[in-house]
Length: 231
Image (tube, rainbow, N blue to C red):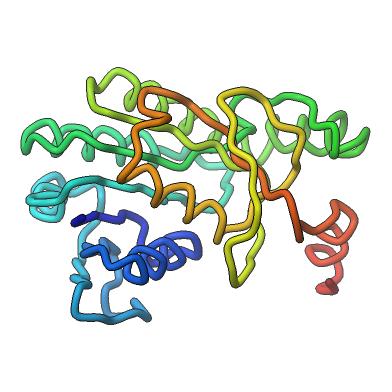
């Protein structure tokens, strides 16, 4: 297949491009900073474009079989519109060109629910606090993105991940169209799930969750790493 990856130079995007190339797909990697993109290959085309640029997005999408988006930005207190802008530009370009398959990354925090593995600290303290403060604008824009995708008429899938962490290989993971208990998702697993959407129709028209089953850090390990720089 020929697959367009938006947000290709982010940590999940690079995993996705690498896995797609290993699976012998042709990849159009779309990034705002093409000179910094670390991957190369005969089946890889790196395109410099901002997903807010409608004409550049049309050129990147032209001729592909599926579009996979890992577009994202860090938390910020200022209003965030990246997710909804990307969704609008991508769906408009795809409809114009007749490209049907779209999968985008969102977050389980868009519709918070208790995680059995999260305990009191995550479920009652951290998750509500982040949602009310630094994550408020991010999650609001993700909800807007999801609605734009659902209303597009395309063959869409929204993939909500839990807290992301780095791993160098794909491991067992869970996918469900309902709430999952896991707290973390590895970027390798998320990329693998995204890539599978390009060639499968099991979750077309659905919003799904993904969590990593093995090798995920504990909540305490993540707090220690973020606060003190220790694993």
